[in-house]
Amino acid sequence: MGLFSPSITQADSTSTTTSGSSSSSSQTPYQQEQYKQVLGQAQNLYEQGMPQYYGGPTVAGMTPAQLESMNLTSNWVTGGAQDMMGLQNKNYMDMMSGRVNTGAGSPYADMKNMFVDQASDAANQVMQNVRGSQVMSGQYGGSGRGDVMNNRVLNEANKSVTNNLAGMYNNAYNQAQNTRNNALGQYGSIMNMPLQMSAGLYNQVGLPQQQLNQRLMDDAKQRYDYNSMLPYKNLDYFKNAISGNMGGTTSSSSGGTSTTTSSRPVVGPSTMDNIQQVAGIAGTIMGISDERLKDNIKYIGKSGEHNVYSWDWNEEAKSIGVRTPNIGVIAQEVLKIKPDAVSMGDNGYLQVNYGAL
Image (tube, rainbow, N blue to C red; front, side):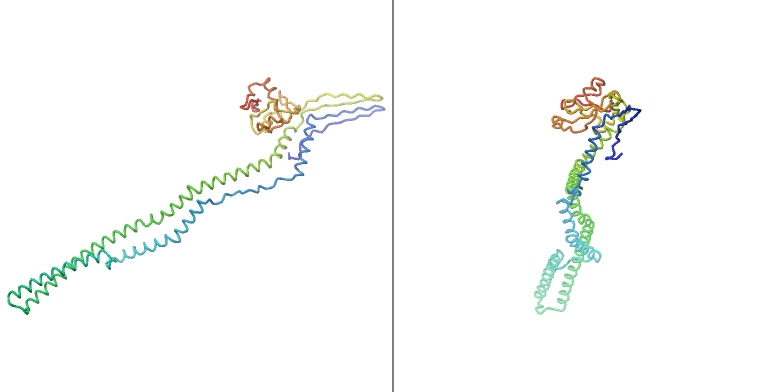
């Protein structure tokens, strides 16, 4: 059943005419006034047209923390990481080639100079002693034997320097290889550390902010959608509640030279025999239904042993946030018939558990 096609029970009318006399009867549904309200409200909504699509934002953008994280990651990958990769590649090539820095300013160069100086000092001291012995023996101009001894001293000095430098180079090589190997082992962790910090900024700071922004946007859109469709939903609920044959009043008239008119109530079956349909109108099984909050109360039929009414909520009801439904039972009446279905709300007004009716 569509929004604009309420089930309306038309009044049945019959008329009989016999030689100078006639009779007629008609039935008016109890919901006749409500049918008129439905059609009037439907016409108004049709003329207004459907609500406009929500114009607010619906997708949360990147937060400042997320943008900063992405910027840091980009700068690292295109800048610092490239420099680090170049340095590590050099260390790897040096390790594979076995090269050791022995140039000026390196520890190796300083120790080499020290060994050379020590060997030279020792050789000079030995040669001075040899020269002194020659002078003491009267060989002032030197001798072939002295020259041989001097050459031997120099050879021994060079050999000492060479041995010391070889041992030092071996130690320097092993130390350099170990240092490079350790550096290469830590290379992955060092390269990933800035990325992990950026990911933490993105996921632990930026993402929760973005998710909160998205929830706020979703909530705003849901509120807009609810409020914009509320008139249509209320009309649909009201139309469903009054549909069906709830009975009515039958009027008849007859007469020839005179006319007699009478009326009597007619009770028919109702589609609201299950009172939980009324609960559906309220949107919840428990609904405020205190008579003190209602104006313009009109009887429209029965559901089981309970009378069903339509009404308007008064200003007191609106002040506590009650605006729907506009059809159902009256709590004070239910209290007399089924007291366990009625309770006092926190606001001091009676509420009905429609599910218990």
